[in-house]
Structure formats: structure tokens, C-alpha cells
Length: 334
Image (cartoon, rainbow, N blue to C red; front, side):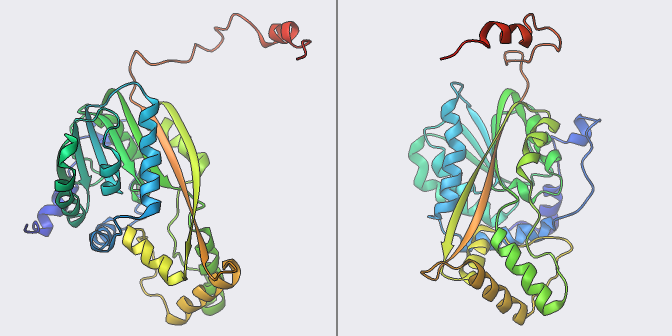
């Protein structure tokens, strides 16, 4: 399989059929560039060759995200899976949600090819699967075309997270479901502390080494701002133990989760790196010598509006006051 021309690929990645700018004029995409999306694509190309297909963290997050389909009676014949943990989602989606057609999309050509090559092992599940190279920031999907959008550990690398979520909503048919998992602000808190101390000691200042992530309190607002109805947010924290800080960094590379900040310092001094590892181990190592790393995952669910959905009553329409309820039930004891 030949690699597409670089200019053609970049042009395709910037085409958007579900554009918040084009369809919802009052919701404009952010022009702030926090992450280098071209660098992130290259990191995901590398991860396609390094990734562990039995990564327990990725598999657990994918399973927990798709468990939400089992809480819904509705089926979702057509689904779109956005970048992140594509292969883990593909394995976990079997038998869930009544999915018949599945589109797998990633900004990384190598990651898409990896998933396509692995499809032959899943041919028995009767899901018609197609693959495309595309960018979550410029979603190349027609509006109102899919019943379900899934994003597992990918959207936290977008420069305009609300805009990407708006485009996902626009891609959904009415009463379609949006499922997403992103890393939250407490992720890699141990590494952040160790990096900060080491940089202060060795370089006399702090430079960004770990990417900024959304906080739990922001997730509900993101869903509402993107126009989803019946928003739901919950959080899990996973702690993974490593033999060394180097093993943690290797795992992050294999996941495609290394630093992609536009304003990053491109080279890390050797003595600063060694100091970071030493601080990490001295502050957080367990008795057996292993070090922990925290991964906070924020799970989000939201629906595209439909007349059949539950709606809040108009403010002031209540016929019984809380004062009356208190009078009637306040004096009762169990």
C-alpha cells in the first residue's frame, strides 16, 4: 500500500463537511493553536508501529466507554469512530449497540492502515467497516449521516475541543448518541510534579513538558456548549505501575501521547531528564521499586436533539411548592 502525497493528505485533513463555522454561524471555531497537529499526526504514525495491542489501560477505557451502549435500548446501525484508541474500540464494539456499519477515522495514515490490516481477524462479526484519513478538527463527514459517534482518548489533542464536539453533533442524525473519553487534568500528576522540580533545580525555571488537559468541572459545560442534550459526565482514575520513568515514557510514545505543544521546548537536556527520573522515583516509588502513574479519564455522553427526548419543564410551571412538600412530609420519621 503506497503512502498518499503529503500535500494531498494535508489538504484532505483540512476539509470539513460538518463545520461549526459553515453551519452554526453563532458558534465560531477557535483560532488558538495550542497543539501542533502535524506533529501529533507524526507521533501517531510512530505509535502505530510501537503500540501494544494488549495494552490493559487502553482496553479498559475502551470497554468502559462502550459499556454505556448496554444502558440504552436504542440501536445504532451506523457509527463513526474518531482517532485515539481505534483498534481497542474495534475489538470491543462487537455485539454492542446493534452496529451494522462502522467508519474508522484517524489523522494518521499508518494508524488507519494498521486497523485495516487487523480487520481480517474480525471478519466474523458482520460489521461492515470502512476506513478514512481525516482530522477531528475538520470532520470530513456529511451532516446528519451517522447514529453514533465514538471518540476514545483522542479529542484532548484538538486545539478547539468545543468546535470538534459541535462537528460531531452535526454529523449525528437526530437522537444520535455521542460517546467520548478524554484524559483529564489529574493525568500524569506525578510526572508533572517531578518535571517542575527538576526544571527548577537544573534550569532555574519551568518549561511545559506535559500537555494541558480539561478539568472534570469543564466537561459538562463542553457538552452543553456543543449543543448536546441529556449530557452525562463521569470520571475514573487508573493507576499504572512502571519499573522506571523511562518505561512510562516508552508507554506514552506507544500510545501516541507524548508532548505536542506548539510552544514546547524541543530538546530536553540530559541532566534535566536524569533529574526528573530521580525526583520521580524519590517522591513516588513504592517499596518494590516500581513507580505509579495516574491516568484520569473523563467519560462524556450526549445526544443530538430530538422531539422524543425528555425535556425540562418551563421555569415557574410547577404546581406544588417545596414549602408544601416540607409541610406534608417534613414531620414524618422512618
